[in-house]
Image (cartoon, rainbow, N blue to C red):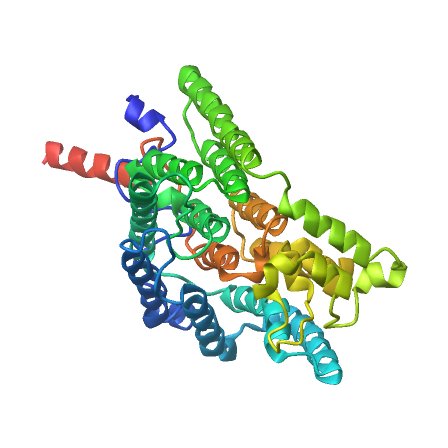
Length: 428
């Protein structure tokens, strides 16, 4: 076995793999296929947003990427919701009832609608996952190429920013590195079986991008991706496996380096400040509040808002000077405050359940949940499209049956058929 095929990247070309195929679908499956315009639209949004961003060193894409991705999610849900399979009605009903209770309390409290939508956007993304179950993504090669190009564009912009503007900048292709690195890691995990000879290169490129960006939560997501990549390797050579384990330790060093470099320029860790404020706010909670959270949507105390005044951009949209749970940044803290342990179990439990229902491979499921949870400990996690989209794509690309594959990515059944064909020709 050559060393090229023995690395993390085994196949030598874009290869057909379980859950990702461009083969024609039977007519009976037409209703399950995601409309082509939705598949192309998502890839176009990502590619155009990335290309437009590269010249803007030191800033994000000039396009409103988060709003565009949210718009795609809404169009996707609206388009496919009428075709929802009966088996998903139960989960949809739970989300609908819970969503209506949130709406009732928001209307009753006269809280700003914008802030309420921001706080409970994760329900929309769970709806995306519900609608995605039993649907099929057919343009897999487009998704693979989009992922490769995005990683290349992000690394190019990061290197250019470092060389031209210096090490103090934290460039982002779409938005903050904490969000988009979770997206990139999730996309790579979803299309990993189709990356062919680009597997190792793409993973290393993301690791380099994360190191340049200095993203702590992003670095942890990359470690999760590397573990997933190693779990997908079928290499039997003990030396190559040793190199794989060694690469894992090297990747694990990236978060340590980033944490040390960030600590050297900051005397305090903002996430610890958020945690302190959270505990002060819930110090008088009883069991009921811990289970269901505060009344939606309850503003934080004046003392908490004053303590976090540095983040005034996250204060209430009506200019009242109040602040809501969104200012706590971490999704887990935000949901605990607004919806309690029940809300956390609903958010992560539904995502886990739907991936299991869709038969997402266990290793991929664990990888994506790891990215979602670790991102939720730092920033908005499942409350943003950058974490939710890879989970939806994992569900959408599961449809094709498993077929046994060799270590070089070739299909054993195809090789057998080719051998029989050659034998017939030789005997002819």
